[in-house]
Length: 126
View (tube, helix red, strand yellow):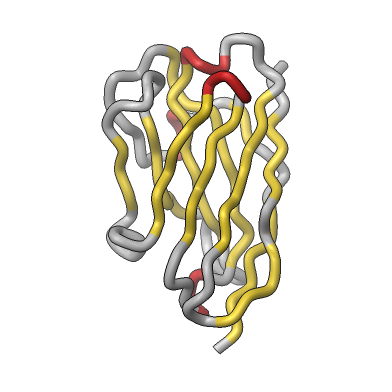
């Protein structure tokens, strides 16, 4: 069983930045692709960003391209989501998730992810 714990959310103003962190309890974290998803009130959870197991290709939702950056530090069992130029429409609960083993490509579908964190709230005021 792998536990994922997100942190770094909060209340910010439009234009501000936040960095979300997700720490994994898995001993083989470095071997798995990782992803970030978001769920706004009244909406379904949706893909935000993903990274391959070796920190290679990354992928982003069109709505966050150029503003958000996903990265990983395997020595710390941590995946990050740097969020810049935040907008009110970015308000959501953000979840990290563990993807496929040795995945050399990124995945946008939730079904590819096995373990999920509890989420961290990001609220952007206008």
